[in-house]
View 1 (cartoon, rainbow, N blue to C red):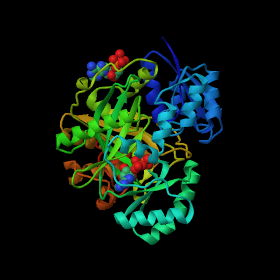
View 2 (tube, rainbow, N blue to C red):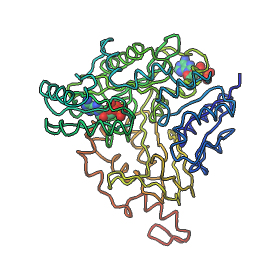
View 3 (tube, helix red, strand yellow):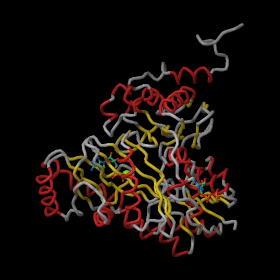
View 4 (cartoon, rainbow, N blue to C red):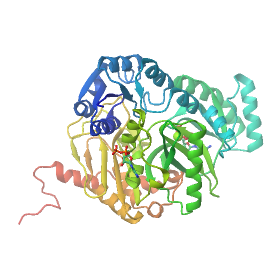
Length: 480
Ligand code: ADP
Ligand code: ADP
Ligand code: MG
């Protein structure tokens, strides 16, 4: 039966979800704050509800989003990622109002959103993880607990906000004096960012690979995995480039990680789409890190290698269907790479470039190329939201073919106005270690040559100049 589904998000994710809703024959309702007046998601949806001037505060306002759902008579809400997606109070508010929340239950989100509770659930299920503490006690007592942990396991150690996410609230601590100093700071920051001042410690996995597993489960407990993704290429503990499947050659190890992910999801009573994140050390031991209780930015790479539309599937599951496929039906094929094209200046510590007008926008296309974006030529990027403009995902049968295709796409991609991550990625796809598929989370620190390019001389800018100038008479222009 035709349903009305409200999308409680913006940008490329809102568009991604709206497309799936419309393909299923349902009605998509967008919400927006004033800075998003010109946004594509509100024009693509079947209906759009203005929820306030924001910025950000209204997208984050549970009462207003619920009010918009009621006003539009939406029967379900898809939270996307970011904003309210992992907020258990929001999922609970939907449950209380009889609105279907497209994601796991508020109880599951509560448990898994708390890294300490999640670790407890996983420890009880014998899921491997690095040693860690409970929430540190308040005051000197907690500092003393931390010092004891440091003495037992050695440095460096990770000081983490228990309610953290999005790469925020994580700091590496190298010695005891730094530990004493930073615990109160970390607490204050966690309180401000997550309204929860709990912090705890984890042993550091040195130069790990970040490998995660997409899982999907129905309410009957049928749980399948859709293989691995490697998200080791990060800046500030945040992902930039994601590939599927992991390039680790040991297939038995990858199978073991995937089976462990299914076990972890079952231990958490997980239903709907989620991601189980692991770290892998130099000796190929793997450790549970966390479960993200939502669809992730990088779900596209998994869709490319499995053929499964994850957002379509999660909507159907939330509306009461059971999984239409079993583990044996899931066949991985080829390779996929996603690059997050951000309005950022990589050479200035990835400083956001919001507020700029996109004067030229020319995107690549062709076989094996997928774009998930929301930016169009002439669009002014609101300053107040995150810097992701468009995700470039390419598919290829072999790894080499995929990298070749990615290189071609980046060369064809022209965005002028804001600085973007494109020239940096052009260096990246030409790097020998990347070409071998060999990277860990220290990749950006150890490959500083990636930051060596000149804006004007980079291929991208040469091209954009070519396109931007109407009467081009430069070196690449000829007359008969
Ligand atoms: P978030 O909730 O912000 O995603 P995660 O716990 O998933 O936080 O960690 C994000 C990133 O931080 C990881 O991908 C990894 O690069 C780094 N990290 C987190 N915990 C550890 C650890 N114990 N050892 C080494 N690196 C870690
Ligand atoms: P649809 O919505 O097209 O009827 P289903 O509900 O059957 O699809 O499944 C949802 C998603 O799972 C779709 O993206 C579909 O392509 C994928 N899928 C369905 N059946 C299988 C299968 N046997 N093997 C792999 N993927 C499947
Ligand atoms: Mg994470």
